[in-house]
Length: 173
Ligand SMILES: CC(C)(COP(=O)(O)OP(=O)(O)OC[C@H]1O[C@@H](n2cnc3c(N)ncnc32)[C@H](O)[C@@H]1OP(=O)(O)O)[C@@H](O)C(=O)NCCC(=O)NCCS
Image (cartoon, rainbow, N blue to C red; front, side, top):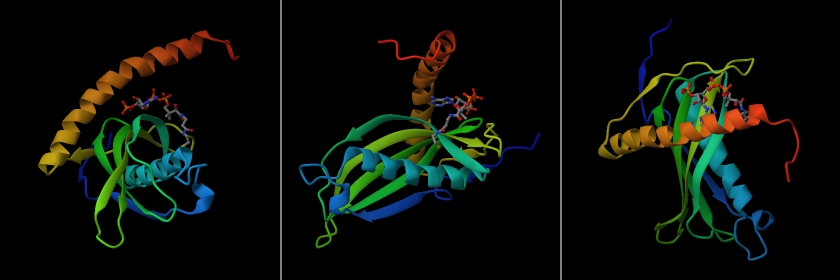
């Protein structure tokens, strides 16, 4: 089996900027939550893809997505994604979204999320990924916290897998 390498967080960090247009707004003139989720998923996938260097990555789950403050039409949204920790084939990615005031350059925190991506081969089978080498204090904290979140998440993931296996397809109203 190929030995795992260590890659730093900055090697795979990703950033995306968007000017918000009316087509992405809800009835209040604020960015629609589903569109923000799409931006979050896409920038997170780029970070995971850069780290994994696999055929591709798929989103396995998104947890604790917080909409902290609204984003208004015309504002500049900036999203940054970092791989907090890599496991066997999965990676936890943290995404933070901010709005930048074009005049002052001041940033307003609008959303944060944690997502898990899995590296896969051409057939969609999970493949191993390299480890993360945290360097700064913040990266080390996020690295430790990612393991606690994985432990909290994995019991629930296993439980849901068991339930899905035991149920036949249907709505179960
Ligand atoms: C994600 C997927 C590849 C996992 O397949 P699987 O058969 O459960 O594979 P495994 O049991 O070997 O798990 C592989 C990894 O995924 C992780 N995983 C699986 N389901 C997960 C979930 N719901 N949340 C977080 N991690 C999950 C496992 O913990 C494991 O991580 P590890 O290898 O680092 O320990 C599979 O469920 C899938 O293809 N889902 C659809 C993905 C998709 O279409 N996304 C939207 C479009 S990108």
